[in-house]
Length: 165
Ligand code: FES
Picture 1 (spheres, rainbow, N blue to C red):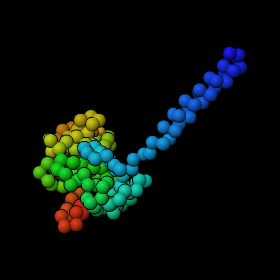
Picture 2: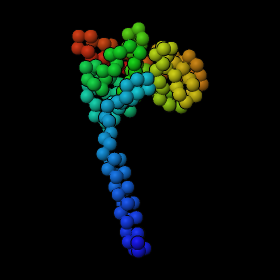
Picture 3: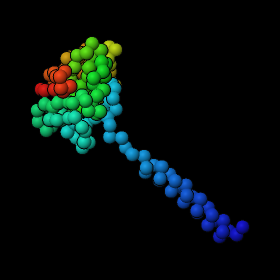
Picture 4: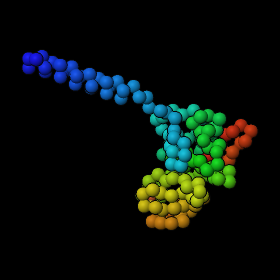
């Protein structure tokens, strides 16, 4: 095989590999559906369009006041006890005993997004370990300030969960 012929074949092979990687990489579609459990997230009032959210879930855009349609696939996970979702700036959870709760998602220490620990019925920050009860009060530092709590009410007839400041 001549050098020129060899280089030509190598070029084709490398090109084929790059093309194949592009095809497999480019064809993977991003899933717009939010992840479901503790610490899962979706955007509300952000750039992602979600079905079943009405109102404002972003503090910088004004008073937090929104509803979630739990028949919509984006929020159906909140029908289950022990589940939580992040909606805009709020973490919404259904406790293991079936109560809906909602607090600001940002830890008051340095702003890390908190998680809901359903087994322990509390929120925990993954950054430095601050813990908050279901009303947002500090259980364990370094955070010294409570999370903002929102009112959560559920219309069982319509499957609409309302979150308000
Ligand atoms: S950012 Fe949450 S404990 Fe530090």
